[in-house]
Amino acid sequence: MQEKKYLSVTKRKFDPITVFISIALLIAVLLTAMGYGTSTTTDNYMFSDFRSFFFVVGGTLGVLLFQFDFQTLIQTLFLTVKSFFINPTKELNGMIEELDEAIITGSSILGLREGNEINGELLNDIVHMANDKLFYEEIEDFVTNRVASVFLIRKVAVSLLSKGAKIAPALGLLGTVIGLIEVLRTLEDPTNIGPAMSLALMTTAFGSILGSLIFTPLSGRLEHHNHLFLETHKLLMSRVSVLLQRENRRLNPVLVNNKLDD
Image (cartoon, rainbow, N blue to C red):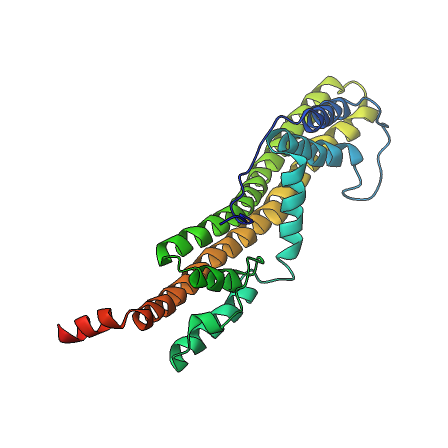
C-alpha cells in the first residue's frame, strides 16, 4: 500500500531544551528547599507553604521532564483529560455492532463501507483491503501495527504517571529530611523553627497527595482504558475474520463443494 498512515515509527532524539528546563527546575527546587529567595514568614492557611509545594511539584515535574519530553507530557495530559469524557471503545463498539448484524443477516463485509481509499476509519480501511484481495493475515498485521502505534503512546502515558506516583512521595521524604536538618540547625533561633518544620511536614503531605490521590488513580484509569482498547480490537478482528472467511467461501465455490463432498 502506498499510503502508510498507520505504520509510523516513533523517533526519539536528544532535546536540549527539555533537558535544560528539567535541570533548571531541579536546581530551583534545591535552592528553594535551602531557603534562597523565600520569605521566613509563615501563613496561617494550611497548604499555603509555597516553598514545600514547589519543592514537590516542581521537583516531580523536573524529574519527569528529564526522563521523558514535552511531547510525551502533553500527550499524557491530553489522554488523561480525554479519559474523563470519552470511552476508548465507543467507536469500536459501534463497528462491532455493525459486524454482528452483518454476521447474523448473512451480509457481506464489503457492503458495510465504500472502501474506495484509506481514510483512517478502521472498518473502511479493512473493507478497502478486502476489496484489494488482501489475505486476512495481511489485514490483521495492518490493524495490529495501527493498534500498536496508538497503544505505545497510551502505554508511555501510563508509565509517566506511574513514575510520578513514585517520584512525588520520594521528594516529599527528601523535603522532610532537609526540613529536619534545618530544625536542628536553628534550635538556637526559635523564629526559624516554624519554616523548617513546615518544609519537613508539608513536603510529605504534598508528596502523599500527588502520589496517592492524583498520579496513582490517573495511571490506573489509563491502564484500565488501555486494557479495554486492546480487548475491544481483538473482539472486532474476530468478527472481521468470520466475515472474511465467509467472503472467501463465496468467492471459492469449488472449495465449498470439496468440503461438502468430504
